Length: 146
Image 1 (spheres, rainbow, N blue to C red):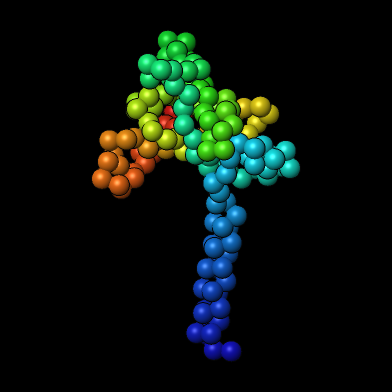
Image 2 (image 1 turned 90 degrees about the horizontal axis):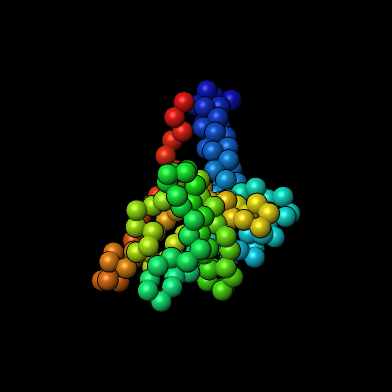
């Protein structure tokens, strides 16, 4: 075999390895019931759940627990997915600034028991899609400081 053929095969093998490794870590869109089934079956891949916050008639978020004086990196709220199931969500990072303004929320994480442990929050604010172009504002946990 020529050296160019061997080099080509090595490049193809590396490309396939990269595709396989990134493909297995990709998360999927689902609802809370499916996320719970996946967690109980031992699936550790993260999932995306789309939903809306429970709000009172005055527009305040119901079931929101956030007290920065006690722990600024602990937020709990109830999210209702697109199939109508409400679920407690725990986000161990500061509260996103526009959480109360969000029309819809995408949370990324896993079910752990009866709680959805959220790693990332995407907010869909109404002011950003008035012209029909929906935009999500990504909110990530800040990097842990040593």
